[in-house]
Length: 113
DNA sequence: CGACTGACGCCGA
DNA sequence: CTCGGCGCCAGTC
Image (tube, rainbow, N blue to C red; front, side, top):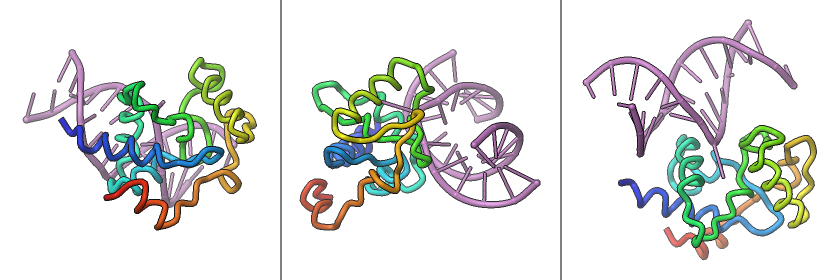
């Protein structure tokens, strides 16, 4: 199995700081898998609980949640983000304000690729 | 092996 | 802003 890819994706997602969000596409790029946004989505679903991957900080490139408004997961995601101070409006987040802007030093330190 | 299915993304109408 | 269409790729049937 391509366990290796998932490991890299999970590690990258864990590097997202509290109070910030990222997108599936951005994670794919940072994990060295450009164009594999869908794979990131799968990786979130397969992520083991004990890894404590902050999947709720990852959304679509539009700032929309990955789930339809009203669903359990969407509500959970909204709650968790608001606890971190991220403003959520109509099932979406203002990326221009909350998207994670990783700097090289941070990536080298946390990802170690 | 082909068809279908997504926690996606971009572009054009 | 909404649709439709296409690219992408691991899993499943």
